[in-house]
Structures are given as C-alpha cells and as structure tokens.
Image (cartoon, rainbow, N blue to C red):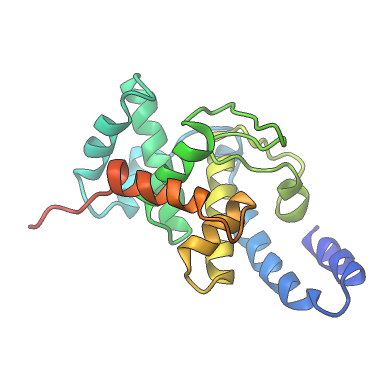
Length: 198
C-alpha cells in the first residue's frame, strides 16, 4: 500500500519529492501498527497505561482538570490514559496533545470542521489514503489520537523540534502565530504539569 503511494508521489513530484517520500514512509510504518483492538475504538487499558506512565498522580490531576469537558469519570480516565499512551508512543508531551485537542475540537469526539477534519485531533480524511488503511475510522479514539500524534511528530521532526512551526503545519497555518499561541496558552494556563518531587 505505502509503496504504491510513494511511487505515485515520486511520479508527481520527481525532483524534490524523494526526501518527503522517505518521511512519509516512516510515518506510514509508524501509523499502520494497529491491532484489531485499536481500530475497534477501545481505550488504552490500565495495564497498557501503567507500562508507560512514570507518575501515578498524572491521571488524577488531569482528570480533575478535564471534568468540565467530560463529566463521566470512567470515560474521562479512559480518554486520558489513551492520550498519554499515544503521546508517549510518538515522543510527545501529553499535556501538549491535550492542548491541541482542546483547540482543535474542544474534546468532542465527533467534531467535524468546515473543511471536513474529524474527531478529537481534527484529522483530514486524506491522511487515511496517505498513511493509513481504508478501514480506519477517524472518529475512533485510538485511530484519531494515533494519527494526530504521529502527524504532529512528523511535523516536529520536519521542523527540527520547532514547536511553533510544527503546530502551524499541523493546523495548516504555517507562519501565523494565532494557532500555536492558542495551544501554548492552554498548555501553560490549563494543562502544564510538573511531576511531584520524590
């Protein structure tokens, strides 16, 4: 599947596309590792979360902060465990991912933008053709967060760790300050978390 995509991209953009194709191939490989459980919209289990979590208080602190968006405690904690897992898997700060989600969808699972972006992290459907499989449902929790985190990681790598530019790319507003600033403001005012000293 992704070899066909890479070949088509090379034919369309023969001179400058090769480096981008390599980046997309890496993104494709990372994104396509879905188990049947992950594409069936099941949240990360406590055991999966515990394998990556380095702080036992993160979940309870973030749960309290998220309460106004998700009043049901079980739903809230399942969501947070999954955000943490997918962010950590992509090498991202889970608090940054929570900030992106708040700006993108206001924590609404079935949000659809005027441009057709879907779900918590507002993933455009073209990403399914670019890096996924047609069976992927962008409204499914794990699928949406996996795509969003991997796409943000891709842009962060492309911008050599520059969060401002990576966030601009993620939103399609590269060079404009509004979107990155919204994310940074939420990160610092709402989602910033420091692990307690031991």
